[in-house]
Amino acid sequence: MLSTPQAIWINVSPSFKFLSQPLLHYLSHHTTIACWDYHQTPDEPCSLDTAINLLHDYLQCCDQPLHLMGHSTGGLISLLYARKYPARVKSLSLLSVGMHPAVDWQAHYYVQRQLLSCPRELILTQMVDHLFGSHIRMPVHRLVKILEQDLDYSLSPHSLFKRNSIASGNVEVPLLVCGGEDDIVVDQNHLGGWKDSLKPCDRLWVCPNERHFFHFCRPRAVSQTITTFWESLSNPLQPSLSSRMESSLGYPSV
Image 1 (tube, rainbow, N blue to C red):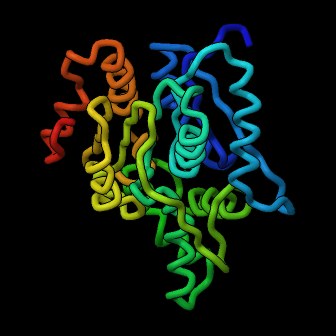
Image 2 (spheres, rainbow, N blue to C red):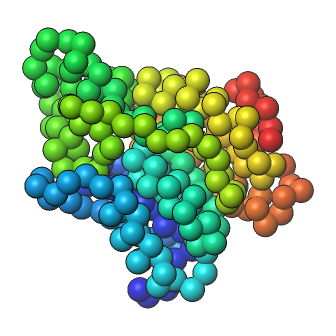
């Protein structure tokens, strides 16, 4: 590495990697960002523990605790890692991760597959608007293909045969939780469930009028929220931007 990173973005979905690029671009203006990717072959069993162990091997090469960030299952891996190795983590930023952290878009999809007697492509076509919103400028058929690839090649605790759960609860490290106001996967109830376990330094922020992939649609706002959270850890007496936005959306400042 040319320079020691200060923050790590955790990505476990090759097909969704492009969705994080605008956010990482804005964050790179404030600090050194590294992206840790986990890829698995179609024949390899899905194992969260394998990903956590490989992430630990990587982070042991860093000489200081780092800010961890991740969206959905990438956030779940970050959360589980922070629970297991809190001394290695300076802070944790979770995007589209609810109080029941295993809930992801794939779990939502598999519920639909069991309820609806129709082809996979049709269900995914119906889910595109729910996940991305109508203002994303990509053909629907391309987004459907991306969702298909994520089902086939990404790490997830769920399958067509079984949906798993992971214990809720907080972490020792400072925590920022972000979500989309109109997300049907990690909805307001899932996000609001964090409030009772947040520490004084923690923050909960909701991106207005956005859905599951809000960080792709509003990268500047999400970047500003994350960097303000980091700054608040150095100066805890200064009111943060995220605190003011929480209050405006009905979430109390914590």
